Image (cartoon, rainbow, N blue to C red; front, side):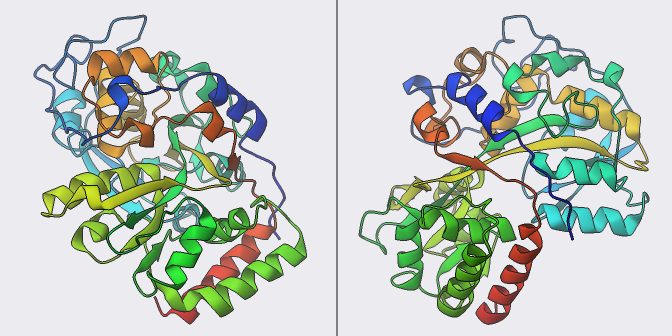
Length: 404
């Protein structure tokens, strides 16, 4: 049985977020994301990777050169292609290979099977999973002398309870969960998780997608019932399983942690998703010749998820020096904001509002990246408890019933 861990500091993390690190209206409002060009200089300390002026302020811009190949195992479509491609080669001197997973459970299973020989250098677990990865020997301690740009992060995103001294992890970004629907097919107003569930079982039956992780699938039901998804009440788990397996599964078309591409292709008319991926759907729908104005993003209510993903160096990493150099490079403000514009998640840099104003004044759909204090107050962070095993079992039963 999994050892119970109460991680992610739901109070301290959320309280930090509710007081700072938000952008309200202004230049970070609606429209389309603009993917900006690569650096025109080899010196990230001098030139903005986003094509604008270098950000002012007290930021470190140390770039540690590296060499060889660098293998990363991460969530799908989670970095600007330039940053894992041409820029990584020209700025750092490394060639990157990137593989993707749909859930933390898949990441841990893959690393454990490799027994320190997975071949990956960088991995990107969600914060609460870091302690068990340390315990299992799946990640190694960081050499902070190789990450001098850590000071560019806002204080809200360092020293979390899962890794108080950042010995093993560095904040990549944080976000939340909601859903996306085609208002020409689902014409009623959608605001809550119960609305989403009802639409999946009616107008969207056979055309809806769910995030491919057990906690999110079960979390949807908990939140729709006004319950905390960290509940360990056996009756709640029984009720969750009964509803999802007996009543809901038959309506699911797919389990898709990155639905933006399929949404653009017309495969789904509504989908659960993380805010950044669903933000990318607007651009992809337009690129595919669709009308983005037909689609609506909804942050789940009355409660939803708050997560933070982290960069870690895998145990037995073939190129740990390059891994540290790449993580440190992602903390250069111009690189961080370039990446943010692509993946659509808050990267946790200090003075974020000033950075956006300077480096990304045309940032669009900012309301899908930066949340208000009132919204954050409804967010719940995951706790790793014995219920996780039961949730995985529930998801397996739902998948079998759905045939998806």
